[in-house]
Length: 359
Image 1 (cartoon, rainbow, N blue to C red):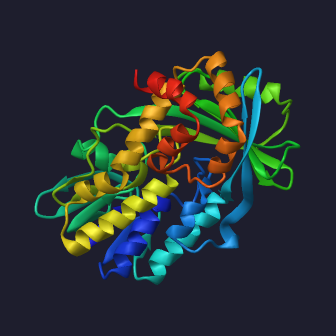
Image 2 (image 1 turned 90 degrees about the vertical axis):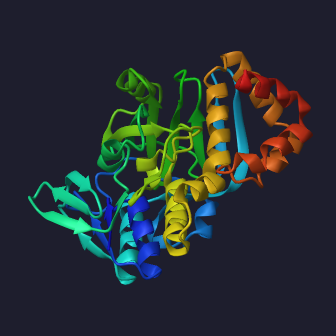
């Protein structure tokens, strides 16, 4: 029997794959409702279609453009189609896949402690004690499984705040504001029907930057708000120990360029199912599948954090060339190793920014 802690996208998709492959799976969720509270923006690339069937039931909007703003310049690029998810319906879609495949779901089960020897003894806040053979932590950036097992130590975080609000904007494009803070960015993602998801993330003074951003966009009424911690990926994180495993953001599997973890979290579920089915090292499978890509994401983010307003202005000018624009239309931004060198071949002057990144 396998216990999965957390019924978000990573836990639910992992449970589905494990149950589908014949494992007995119990999923424990601390909240009353699947998908709530919402903690992220929920924008994913078309690579999601490589993992599951895209269902209109959990898609709020489709976008095919990105707009990048600096203080003095602006760039609009066509991109491959991306999806704005209704995170509540998306998570429920995934957990229903797991249940239909044989997994059992237990709500209002908050893990507060566990002991591990030959079996894992789980202790929940409702005083229930359960023993299982294996434990999967899919319990997010504050993962109890990761913390107690010491698989992920010295975890770094960004703090994100996002609001849903009414704003007239191009509903086929999401907007990026990389110069609002010096260690991440602000964003506006159109949900549709005149509603956007507007947010910002940074390491400190997040609320101050957030309300300044709302003021700049003349947003006076907020429909709802969400937010929380965003794990910063580091190469020294570990993903398994004996019969303990981490998936998704519990494992720190987040793209440092964007803070996104939906696709990488679901991929980690694939690799865990493969590991247990084929008796292979989960850590090795993850590092082979995602290690290089997450390393590139981290390098790019560290470089972007060093960029000045002048750097962004120059970068925007280079990226606006047609030979670059044509390539960007085809790439999937989840996998930088597939396009970084192609960009350099088409525009060698971009090497200046590469040297800034690795300096």
